[in-house]
Length: 256
Image 1 (cartoon, rainbow, N blue to C red):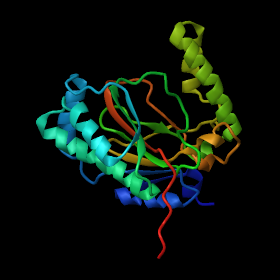
Image 2: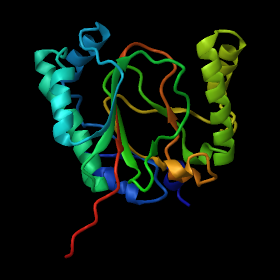
Image 3: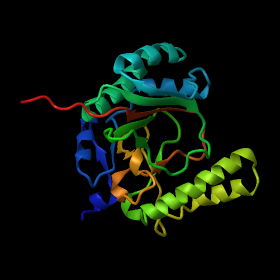
Image 4: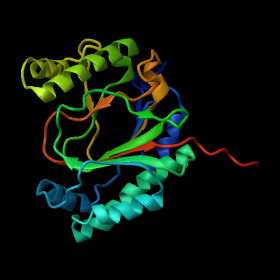
C-alpha cells in the first residue's frame, strides 16, 4: 500500500479532481486555488467586523435554484464587491457535488460564528443509499482539522472516543465543571490515534471534497478509509463556513 493510500488524503489542482475519490483508498481531496481571490480579503474583514453574518442555517434538501434564491437574501450583508463572487463560489461547490453524485438536491449548512468545542472529531453522514461525496469550505479564519487514515487505530476506537466525547459535550454545555476539563483533555490527546500522531489542518482558501458515511453504517466497524475523520478548530474568531452533503439517491444513467 502506498503512503498516499494509507493517509487517505490528496491535494487536487482543480474542483473536478473530486473524481479522484473514485479511488476507495482516498477519503478527501483538498483543492486550493493557485492564487488567492482578492475578494476573500474583503470578505474576511466583513465577517470579523460582524457586517456579514449568517445565522447557523440548514437547508435540508435544495436545488441550485433554491440555493441561489436563499443566498440572494441571506448574503445581503456581504460587501458589494464580494456578494456576487461569494454566491458564485458557493454555487460552484454545490454544482460540483451534484454533478459528481448525479443528484439534483443537496443538504447545505451555512453559518458565521467563532469555533467552539461543540464539534470534535467526527465523520459526516448521508441518508440511506445516497452518494457519499460532499464538501466543506471555510472562507476565513481557522480551518478544518483532520487526521490521516494510517494514524487511526481503528473505527472501534474512533467510535468509542466519539460516543464518550458526545456525552461529555452535552454535559459541558450544561455546566462548566469537570466535564469541560475532560473534554479539553480528549481534544488535546485523542485516544483513537496512534502515539505521536500529527493533527493536520486544511490550508487557507481550500475546498475539501470528502467521503461521508451512509447513516446506516455510522457506529459500525467499517474500514477507516470509508469516511474522512475531521473536526472544527477549537478556538479562533468568527468564520464563514459552507458544508454540502448529498440529500438523495443518485439518478440512474440513461442508455448509451
